[in-house]
Image: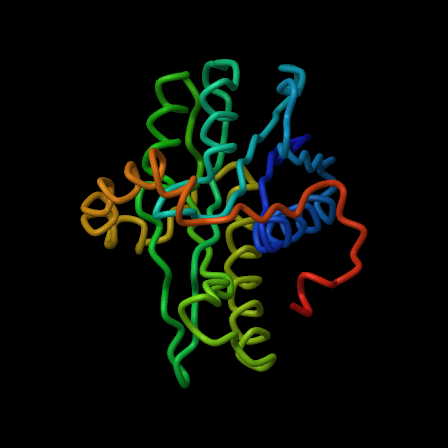
Length: 221
């Protein structure tokens, strides 16, 4: 059992932040102190003390079949720590077609940071792709409230199951992480092109930062 959990998150429309809060709720029910740290516009990296049994987590959305540039830089600059336990959670474009929950695609959103963290000496305890409601409203109509509620409820069950294992010190890997890996690797060239060009010309980055005052205007729009 861990005595402290530190979660670094980067969230756009709030999916990754919501997942981070679910993990905090589970941890606090078990008496585990939990810190949520937003990395938007980070000036310096806040590194937790090394003492105690600590779990680190990185939660973020999937951008261009990879992780956001801010989160990639953050993980790359994060100080090495031998044998420290860590998990990665990426939200991706989940959808619901009648009674079928369709998964999103991670691309290299987990593969790339996993390699970086392993090289830094971290111990990966879990890779959790979470199919939260797709926000690609430029390519499909927005989902109705019933569909959104069903997708979110399903993801909450997944996060609770993840917490039941990982917070107790066990590993947790969803089978589809490995089933979809060939497709994810095949999308790597698109992800790297997005890093180099797409994020400047094809997308506007929308960030749910610490400045959010819960006015809900972005949700309404």
